[in-house]
Length: 437
Image (cartoon, rainbow, N blue to C red):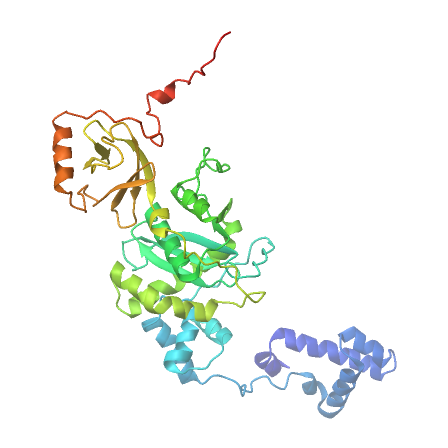
């Protein structure tokens, strides 16, 4: 018995002793064989097999015969050491799933994911994950692509150094397909608009956009409170013009699909950039556009619940003017408009002698150039430094010089009724004209 204790664990020996006791009681006729099977928790057929083994080999026949015999499915020691060495020396910052894919694709090692995970955990190279939290019910996906898109940004050291950038990702709720993924210095209104415009040009108009309550998407009067649907942001205004319904998320759990997506990005993209020696923002974005988005979709895209698509054509939409940031200014007496420390001289309009006092809408394009609009008329296109990109004619130059000398011509009659009233006039109510009899 002492030798058996050295070879077999205590629990196995105690189970064999209990089994022997029950078999002896059944053999003596004190209990029925079916009762013995129930006491041990096995079937009557298994009990008959245990009886034959006990009669043939005694107590030793009740012990596990596999103890001490190597498994025929055991991984060779050399291969196990190779796997651990590869992870320690080359793939040390990859998650287990990512590392398992590299083993199969790059090194032709066809071990199971579970074995690789357990081997890395046993070698203390990968931490064991803690238990999951409370049970949550996953929201059902939209049945068709284009019904709802997720947009979000993730701040992370993507180059594995002190630099932090925002990865802006737009994905489809129905399939988890990535339509857009680019790194930016920071998530801004311009970078968000650039992503949305790229998706619309690629796929078409979608039905709804799901986002967090960041300042680019929503105005939230009270921190952490409800959004103000009546005061849209620049992005909200552009989506409204395109007929896209915006949906705010009120918790990270509500954005579970995009949050899990970013967890995958953070566990893979930095390592892929390191393995390829990519250290610049431009190089990373080129790699994303030309290679990695397609690879990412090939692994994680899922089929939609229904056939078809909800995307619509947008051929008749002027996306260049829709995806701009708009600001309102008043034209000064010298026919200039001031914006962000810039002074832009306006061209002379053929439909009005002077534009002084008019309300001008400044459209700031994604390339930072500026377009000025007054009453639906395009007045001029300017560089980010305020320089007129279209040269003035000689007549326009003379008109501008005359205006700068202070000789502003009086407007001719009849006045153009399309010109909006001035700011000063808007402070007073317009009295209606009545006649008394």
